[in-house]
Image (tube, rainbow, N blue to C red; front, side, top):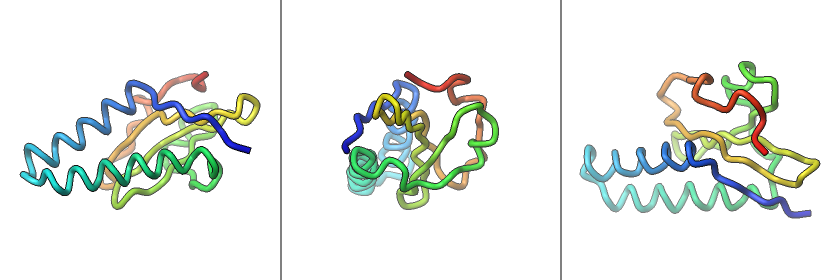
Length: 110
């Protein structure tokens, strides 16, 4: 059964910030576009495989289960609501950055 995927505004902002960093700071617009396509493809795959991710360090800091998917060296953070058949993308960060669970929603989305 398929799930519905929703990207929170905060997660989208983090993705956009990373893509702009690649374009402006790294002077790598082609890399930014490829990375954006990879991120979008990984998020789209959550429709059919929402439980395929692993539990990131952020998971232990909230009262709901957080999963993530690896895209190159970055993490797409998400929560699966099985009752509603929805996946909420709640964060994004480069794997070299320290986790900041305080930036994630305190309560499960939805």
